[in-house]
Structure formats: C-alpha cells, structure tokens
Image (cartoon, rainbow, N blue to C red):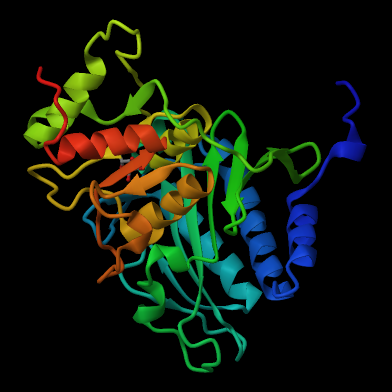
Length: 344
Ligand code: P6P
C-alpha cells in the first residue's frame, strides 16, 4: 500500500477542534459531543460489517412505535448511541426512532444544555440483504440553557432551523460521516487501518440541477395526479436530451440523500393514499437531512413548506420530503401546485 501522505491527513477530531478554535463561542462541550458521536459510529460500523458473523442480523420480537418490526441491529445501534451520548454528560434529553417516548439522561451534569435526536439505523429493511444503511443525528440547544431541570418534550420538538449540528453516517462500501454545524458540509471516511475518520470532502456543494430522481415508483398509483405528472415528465424524452432522468432508489434515505448531495437530482418520499403525511419522520430524519442538503446548496421542503421551518407537534411526526438540487425541487413544487404546462 502506498504511504499515505500523512502530512495531509486531517482526522475528525482535529477538524472539530479547529472549528472550535475558529468559533470562540463554541464550547468544549460541543466538541466532546461530536467526538462521542464519532466514537459511537465507529462501534456501529465495526459491528455492521460483522453483522452476519456475530449473529446480530435478523429480527427481534419487538415492534417500534410505528408498528415496524425491530431488527437486532436497530436495537444494538440504539443502545450504543444512547450509552455513548449519555456518558458525555452534556445531553439533557434524547429522542430516538426506536423509543416511543423521550429519553432523559440520568447522568447529565447540572449544566447539560444539549438535545440529541437520532434514527439509530435508517434503512432497516436493507440490513439482512447487505445493502447500505445509515444513522441520522440532529443536535439542538435546550430551550432554556440555564435550566437545571430535566429536559422536556418541547426541547425535542423544536423547528429544524434551530439545530446546531446535523449529521449522518453511511455504512456502505466505506463508512462515511457527514456533518454540518451551519458552516457547510464536510465528509469524513473511516480508515480502519488508522481507526480514524479522515476528512475526504470539505464544504461539499451539490449541483443546482441533476439528471436523476429517487422515489419508490411502486407506489405510483397511490400518488396524487400532480405527483404522477412530475414523474411522467422526468421520464419523457426531451429533444434537448435533458430528459429522461435516470432512476436511482436504494430504499435507505441516508444513502439516497448522500448520492443526491454528490450528484444532484431529487429525492422524493411524497405522501400517498395510504400514508397521507408521508413516511419519513421530521424530528430525527427529515430535519437533519434537510439541514445537510441546504448547507450543501440544495433545497428541502414538504412540497410547499421549507422542512426546517415546520414546527413538529410530536416526536414521531411524519412528513413528505422533497430534497435535492434547487432547480429540481422548485420544478417538482411547480408540478405539485398544478402550475407546470407539461401534459403527458
Ligand atoms: P419504502 C427506511 O425504512 C426508510 O425509513 C427510509 O430510510 C427510506 O427512504 C424509506 O423508509 C423507504 O421506504 O416504502 O420505499 O420501502
């Protein structure tokens, strides 16, 4: 193996510490939380890659709040993240896809002022078939930073624009850690030979328009007429070769959004006749993905409203999600309003 140009390597800890030095208001607590998060991701990455060997594939007997059967790796990842984030002492309350209710932190220190929300393993249906899965995280300040009381549900259901950081981990051909603190999006790739996340893409910017769309077309007949029109439009051959778009759909939102950030295009999980509010959860999926998409220069809405402006009313509230290149999402919204001239 060629020698790594080690002088150029920057680990996630070095990157986070540098960011802290650039922002005097950034406290060591924030840096410690992000380092604890990266540690939890390293543990999950190790065990996701051995899942078939250390017997954590398959189903538990449990179903989660949404009635979805919980797979062993879901439970394992949930426990790893909860224990790692509790130990930090800086988190006063958490919410997880796998927990019906809020998760208070018994070991929080008196001045714990951060709120942590997460989907421990997104893409569960892909676990047993060795297809990319991911983890999604959002971090907020508690509403009353001077409070010494336990966190409350109001701390958890804040609007997404109040996130101080958003991140995802992607367990694919390599393990990618993407995060933003509102100063752009950086990608880190895990190098198991070093046991470190190495900065691989800094200040990622997505194209303003793409050539692919990502949606589960199996539900086409459950979509609105306007939604169907947009998909028909993308599949129509255009004389300027701008269409048809190619279809890419993995069924793990993190993976589909990651590809969209890199290549451009649009990821769509709309409402339909059986899921009138959409499928993805706003608090611990859509909000974090929306912040990352926007920080990479994209757009993320529920078809009309900016995702980050929506006030959630419940931990597990669902939302439609249209996320990707600005021009693609705006064009889709034009169809959803019934204002596009295209006729199939
Ligand atoms: P469908 C995974 O279970 C998930 O929550 C998202 O990661 C993904 O985008 C979506 O569901 C896939 O849902 O209905 O296409 O299988």
